[in-house]
Structures are given as structure tokens and as C-alpha cells.
Image (cartoon, rainbow over all chains, first blue to last red; front, top):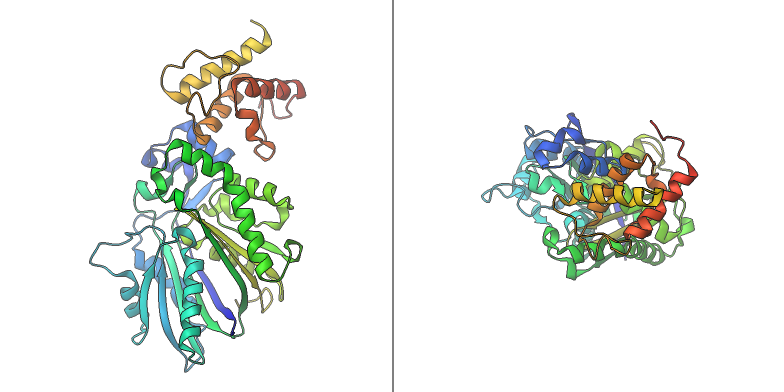
Length: 320
Length: 91
């Protein structure tokens, strides 16, 4: 079976950075609540630009990833992955607008959101399955994700995180030269399908099981890749908060250095973009090595836990 | 008021601020989640207020939520932090 390869990962962040305290009034957070977000959840600054149009947010990452498409090749699928179901007015189909914007006239475009913040990893899996099913040699797919924290309702996940603006994109093909995907594992716990309307008991229960469930999914993906956790060079995680990772690291009995957590305080949780943002930060810092094994890990409300194991190719340079 | 009573009183005072309603009568057996219906974030908020009130400093890296299950375990934890002294105390 041909392997899924990630030919180019790109990310985009709005310039405007705010400290979480500047959002206190908008989000209705008391001083002590902001203190909890800062001290225990590890949040500090995030990118937030209410004046930036959704498409101006999505376009730079999408274009950068698409620029890696070799001459003469075509993009069969464009998948717009998102967490919030309604990211645009009802008469705007984001995937179709993006397709036209990018000049992909013959591309089939659709949106995908059912795994919330895991949707971006899920979209790569779906796109690769479609390419495999079609069996067209040299065909590509483009995953684009990104959304704006356009309302306090979507910006604040109570007791959990403060959402920020960002976008990411990934050009996918089969048996290409990019990073090889070895495994993608998800577990969905449907009993938490009520998102932000869970009862206090359900929220408490979810918080208690979070670290161990996420650890199980990470280990399942690593095992499916034929590896052990010791073989993994670095976990490239979501940026929901530090507490979630402290629990997961404890459940894995792993070294904290094996988890890239620097962007939690810098960028906060950017919907389904986190793992790709963190990937590009690491790549730009020269911290992704040729042949290195990495796990991209995300969790979506609803609740889905997802982990993708990859081998990076191309060193810490520009190739992604 | 003994040290222990002062710690429990500090927890009770902070609870009033966090719950924004009258705090039911507290005993050391009172459980923060089951009896007082605090969620995890409110419990952390409570911890921050108790830090201010008692002068202890909590390192988030070392925090074990088991310390925050009941008034008794919370007071034990505060006393252990007071006894250990905290390098950042008085900051």
C-alpha cells in the first residue's frame, strides 16, 4: 500500500499579539480566573486580530503549501478542516471560496469538522485514503485549516483554554519525498459529545481520564507504526494547556523534554492548527532532523483523541 | 486561633470568593468537588487565593490534584508548604 507523505507543511499567524489579561473583559474572566490560566494552564500571549478576514488568515498558509506542488501535477482534493461548525455565514462555503481563490479549478473541495481540533489530522487521513482509492499516480491533496476566535463563545473553553487565530496547510501525496506517515490512531469517547454543555460531573470525569486516554492513543499510534515510545524523538502536541500535558506526561511516565510545549505560552490553542504551527516552529528552529520520528497529537471536543506518527525527511531545512 | 484553624479559615474565606455565594458550614471532611460542586478551574482559583492568604507558593509542575480533594487534604498541603518554606514567599 502506498504511504501517505506530507510534502509541505505551512503555517500563518496574524501579527497582532495580546496578553490573556487583555481578553479578560471580553471573555468575562475574573482576575483569579486569568491567574489560573496563566499560572496553572501556562497561557500568556496569543495572536488575535478581530479585523482580519477568515480568507486573509487561510490564504498565506494554503499558498505556501501549494507552492510545493511540482510542475505539471494537480491537486485532486482540497479539504478545509475546522473545529467550529459555523466559521462563516451560511451562504459562504469556505472550501469552495478557497478553491477558487487558489486557482484550483478542477479540484474537488469540501469541509470536514467532525473531529473538532483533530479534524486537520483526520483530513490528511481522509485525503490520503481518497488518493489511494483513486489510484491516480502523482495526484495531490491539500489540507487547509484555520479559524478565527470570532466570538467569546468560541474563544473561551471554560476551565480549559483560550482560543487564538492561526492557519495551517499541508500538501499531501502518496509515496512522495516528504515526511512519511506511519500510523494515525483516533479514539472517540462519544459520551462527551455535548461539547461545552457537559455537566459538572462529566467535565470532572473527563478531566480525570484525559491524561491516561491520551497516553493510550499516543502509545497505540506508536505501536501501530512498529515503534516504541523510546524510538520517538519528540511529541509535537496541541497547545490546549500545560495541565493537560502534565497529566499526559505523568500517564506516560515520560521525560517532559520529549514534548514541545514552548508554544502554549506564546500562541495558545489555535483550533486544529496547533500541531502544524508547532511543526513549523520546530522546522524553522532546525529541530526536526532527517529520519527523526515524531508524533503529532491533538484532542478535539466531542471527544476525540488523535495521534499521527511520522518520520521527517529533509533535515531541519526548508523541506517539510 | 491555632495555625491549623487559621489555614482552614483562609480556605473558607477563599471559598466564599470563588463560589460567589454563601459557603455551607465547612468541616475538614468537606469535599471540594463532590460536596461544594467546584469544578477543576474553581479549585485552582481557590488555590491561588489561598496562596495569597497564607503566603505559600505552589509550583504548578509539582501540583497534585489529590491535595485538593477535601478541606483536610488541602489544609495538610498548605501546612506542608508552610513548613517547607517557599523561596519565593514574601515576593
